[in-house]
Length: 587
Image (cartoon, rainbow, N blue to C red; front, top):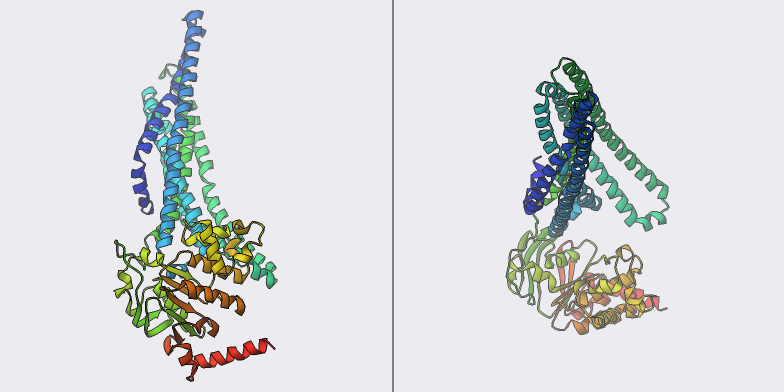
């Protein structure tokens, strides 16, 4: 139950609803308990009628009165039960909503390292399946627990008042039930944890398969992926069945023990009636109704225990992520200006997940309003520099400043709002093209969207679609070609009108003619904006104010296009190679 203590803050938040729900529950149970008392009265009236100790008119009047009391009390109890569910079950939905938002906010805060170490399917399972199981605890389990305790206490009091000796024999099976529940609960908790882990594995594999369906089809490995999925599904099924086997013991044990109690009531009660220890057969009938009224509450003890154990296992999994402290935190509450020089001084950085040192003692100054191009082989550290400017990671050593202020002392929200970033892998959402472009600026007008698309040289493509800018894209923008996705991503960065523009090899999927047009537009809008372009093409870099060449995390060349083509090195070699390829392509 320790893991479930995390939910106490939500119980406190909705305490008013819960208190009202508890009061309604108690009152509803009291009204429903009028039934056995008036059934006893009916038996007494019938016995008196048979003995002719009362007149027919009195017999009829008392019989009708007892029946009316039973009907009215049952009706009131039913109405109150409805309102009980409306309060307590609604609270469970409120808490489910709050908990999902809490988990999602935590996901948003966590750094990229977290997402590299954890699988998407597992993250989705915790915010859906696990939260759903927790909701069952804060809703149905809580409601039935209150219901059971209330009913059990009141029924036992009524039973003792009616016949203490008969009550004693009736409750004999209950301690046995408690021991069984304790042992089964421990086993359920263990197996529930395993079930949730297997569900996460299944969700992860499914998510990856659907995301990579084009690769699966291209390689023709549908049978293999189906076989792997079937294996995971079978393992998950076996764990589910293993859990169900244990849970299946609850209800048979309840029925057996309640049935035993009924037999004891009939036998012991009958003997007491024969010996004159109880005054009427109505007492036996009353007890049988009480015992059967306890059937569902006692049965729910097992069901509720199972829910609580599963909820605890799920909440424990949720807490694992909620307790993770974000590596990147906003340490500044006030607004900070983000439009000055960007300075790397002896900066080194190593990726935690791979232990690869991406940057070694980098010294680089990017002046305000300057355009800098970064070139280098794959894995040389180009994208890492952009990630550090966005503060997606914190540097290991050295200093990284903007406006002469260490980047960790800048307001993180201001920093990222003032950056227009186009990643190497263009990611678009399953939404309209217009909303994808407006993603960085929700209040942008339609004219702003069109202007940004024109600057990214994608407007002509968009207007040819049937629904134009309202065309809804498939997952990850699969509806568009690679070049179109890149250009929509560029439009998304442009529309923000940020002070810093970062382009990470975002023109790799477009032809050189289109690239040239986009670069001309970018040069026009990047006046007074700090721009960093990462590329493998000299054509993307040649017009930059400064070109930086990286190799194995070190800066090996730095200068303008004219300076670098006149000295031996990587840049000149790349320039001549691409120049010859371009010439060959025009033959």
